[in-house]
Image (tube, rainbow, N blue to C red; front, side, top):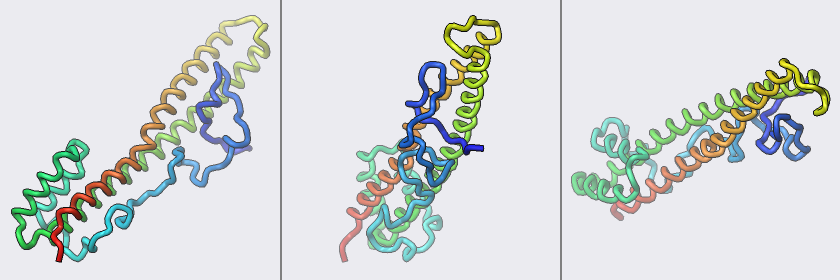
Length: 209
C-alpha cells in the first residue's frame, strides 16, 4: 500500500484531487512536519544570544523583577518600541547588579519563548495529521465519484450529486486549512527572530567591564 502524504494546494483542481509531479512527491524527513521551514523543535540559546552564559547569574525565576520583565519582553503584546524604556528602568533599579540581573532576564526570555515555540510546533504537527486525514478522505471521495460517474457525460444521479457536494466541501476545507498553515509555519521563525532581537536589546543595556 502506497504511503499517504499531504497534498499541496496546487494538486487540488476543481472537484478532483489529482496526483502531483515527482518534485512535489518527494518524501519529507518527518511526515508530521508540513512546513517548508526546517523543523527545529528546540530553540538553541546560541541562536539568539552571544553574550555571557545566563546560567552564571543563577536561576532567573528566583529574581521576581527579572522574571516579570522577561514575561513582558517575551509577550507579543509588548512592542519593540517599549522595550528600551522597560530595560532602562530595570537597569537603573538594579544598579551595580544590572549585568547579572540582565542575564537572568535573558535566561527567562529564552525559556519562555522556547516553551511557547515548542508548544506551537507540536500544534503544527497535530494540524498536519488532521490535514493528512482530510486529504485521504478527499482521495477516497474522488475515487467513489469516479466510479459512480466515470465520465462528465454520464447522467447525474442522487448518489453522484451527494458525492459531488461532499467532495467539493471537503476540498474547500482542505484548501482553507492549507492557506492557514502557510501563516502558522512562519510563526516559529518569527518567535526565534523576536528572541534574538530582545537579546540584542538586553546586550545593549549591559555595562562594559
